Image (cartoon, rainbow, N blue to C red):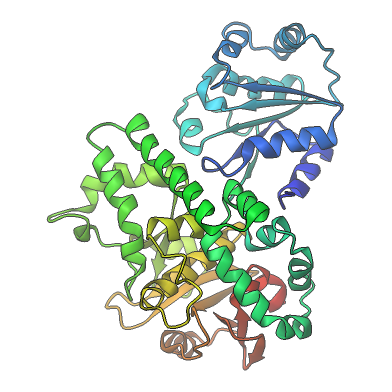
Length: 432
């Protein structure tokens, strides 16, 4: 499966100002596969170091971490001559070796001719005091987007039609896109789940894979968190489907446990943010740029990293998912659609917030900065057109452009863009 980030790796390789690259992302998003695939396709030789699976590798970084010494040690270990321009050096799970992480600084300063990609967890890298600030390039790998999913299951033409903004063909194929989108809701973008679906189209197998991934994440809670915070992290993590299923999706601490307060859960919440298993979308009451300056730290919504994992976590029954009149789906469908739009916006490079009045009279699902404008984005899971909160927002601020994303076909009237859910990642090109 070719990932969209592959093009960014090519840009990094060719850049005259290239620094060692730190590839980050949540666990099981495919970092190791991506680095190996990139090396196999773009270099003559690949030297792979995994500091978790090969702990003895760390010995080469315990003493002199000058690039010359490290290169000599690796040449001896792997019995190869390392040609700087034609060899990719992979340092996987680099958070397991603080000295290896620190060595990236010296490669940047003393030996930038070497091509080095390091990968590690957000949390593990952040905890190290010797992080080489300013000495690495960074990329983040997210779960596979809807476009990547389409390409991964052999529907490349459907993906290309969306990218080409061929609205006439999209309109004619809207039924196909609706079914593919709902399939993506269930499968999500974790590479192992997508690969299994591409091979056998068995949603039960996909659900088993997702359940295993969720269990692995749960195991991480007890391995890497203090016993005091582990139950709090689990309560926050387990509460996300419940919070998103509400009409007002703002996260409320007191719904975790009787007497729960923000200050007592702060460390647990930050741990989840740092792992990138959870995304926080903050509220703003203002209509001013930059959005971050007017965000309310105390009012936010929580989302998981992947809609497929969300469906598994919420125990959405895969046998009724494609039924139009399912009571279960009427309860969760809006939450799934909102989860999907959030992750598509993040993957496309946007930092979403949401707009709402403190008293809760109106709430727009997302607002984003597009160029030098603020664009509200209202999400509907089906074909409904009415968006009272979006109407309130438009009356108050009169934005040049607003977006309502549903399963309806594309259209635009008086600055209101009707964008099909499966095209939301193209919002920048559509608004242009």
